[in-house]
Image (cartoon, rainbow, N blue to C red):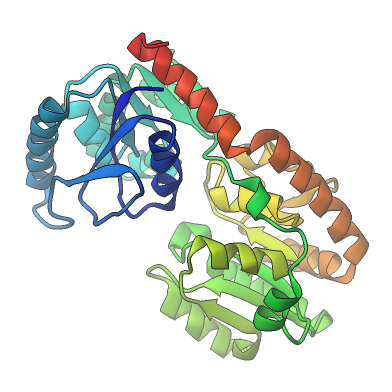
Amino acid sequence: MNLRLCYIADGLSRHNHYMLPWFAKRGCEVHLLTDRPAEMEGVFVHRIAPERGGGPFRHLLAAYHVRKRIAEICPDLVHGHNLTGYGYWAAMSGFHPLVQTAWGADVLVQPNQSRPVRALVRWSLSKADLITTDARALSQAVTDLLGRPARVVEIQWGLELDRYRTEPTPEVLKRLNPEGHLLVLSMRRMIPYFNIDRIIRAFAVARKSVPNSRLVCFAEGPEWFRCLKLADDLGISDAVFFLDWVGEDELIDWLSVCDLFVSIPDVDSTPHSLLMAFAAGLPVIVSDLPAYREWVSPQENGVLVRPDDERSLADSMMELLRNASIRRQWGMRNRKLAEQKANRDQEMTRLAAFYRELTGKG
């Protein structure tokens, strides 16, 4: 596939480290315009703006440099990720064909916080020849925001499924969970609408009935110190592991030793962390949100709870931690779902077909 592709995106995002090298390895000339330091195999990285500072003028300056660099690269197609920030720059480039990808908060959260942001996101979407999302619910939100029909398709980031194990190796088990605790995993960043504090409070209740349980969180985000203090105030600091952010291999190891995945944001699309949990064969407790209902059938492969219902969350944790048979049964169903709907090669091949159609280079 001999396409010259130009992405405008966050160079530090895991998602972009999945997508861009995939196309580079298949014969595309791939360029990334970003304001963050990045190294990706086979990808030409161009820094086009300071990482922070400058206010609105930063976006105008970045857009100027984006247009200039695109003129030098002469790509076949430009693809913006996500809509706030990078999507603005992609739209301001004036280049076509243009693909824009909505990530979730850029449509579900940020446009509701500010009228100017809402107008900018709507404008960025209006410039796209194709919009991709990772959930039907997010596609509908995009259409509602635009106020008119648009060409929107759902494509998952996908996973390299053969890297995921439903059981840990003896070495990994000895290194990460030598005492054989029952591990509840929360993989989301510690920002307010991901409600990590509610997970900690619910776990404190569940642990009274399942004392061999432990909670694993990633200490990344503005709320991490408050969550650390909360665990201490609740008297469970010895049962909550706050991990530094880890590489993908280590993250896959952690998934293999954990017993239950929990994510209860107020709003969300299809998080990559949910697909990773599915690939690792974990049962899940997640918010009762439209995008999650596309993946989770209650009492078949997981539990849906209201994100503000800590009592139900605690009860669901206790029930699943006590029942290894249900955890195993639901986890195997989730692994099969990941194989059917979250295969990276399959999903990127679908995206490649849209690229060929838009560029006329079949």
